[in-house]
Picture (cartoon, rainbow, N blue to C red):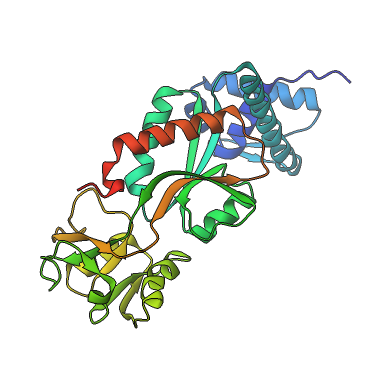
Length: 309
């Protein structure tokens, strides 16, 4: 049976189904209301089924058949978009959807500027982002809900592939009035007697606490938080020190109180920031372009990541 409906009609049908009115779909697609109305009516005629119940001045409601057709129609549009993206990949152009995961502790420093830089160069790439902790990023990659993840080389599973970009030694975060704040650096032994504000995220917390375990020291955890900004606020207000691998753009807590960030001396493993992906997945041109761009951008535009101040 020949197909007599068009992708444009399917697109208009989906827009009306999701917005509930011809007018709203018109604003969404920037297409005139009569064009959308005519297309939906033509689609109903071609398919031989009523897709919507029209309510005077109250919009449209999908019929049972319309509900069933709507899910299939969305799938048709997704497949059509995927076909265009595949053609672009085969032709050598950089375009299509890219879903990026990012570790929440440094997403605010890295992701917005990196996204803007990449899409300025590759305007046909459609980026979405998710901020998550390390364990959540592993799951999102395995479920194919993200294509790549910007994160640390921390407890990486064998089924994931990591490309390192920058190395980040540990730093001690202190309030300006902390007894250790005027030192040039801090040893792990110096911290044992003071209260700690632990950034209590999966994998990260074990990494920070391992510094004390290897030295045979007890750590005095006074506060725990999973939020980087809250941790900085607690530290700046004198609730304890913390250990981090990335410093904010300004040495101020969110409430404006000053902080100090000092190198942690000793033989402590630094973390590496890089791009994580599924090891067995085929690398496509878009992913390679993002990897190259991210590597250059992070090294050039975020010197704070290198603890250079």
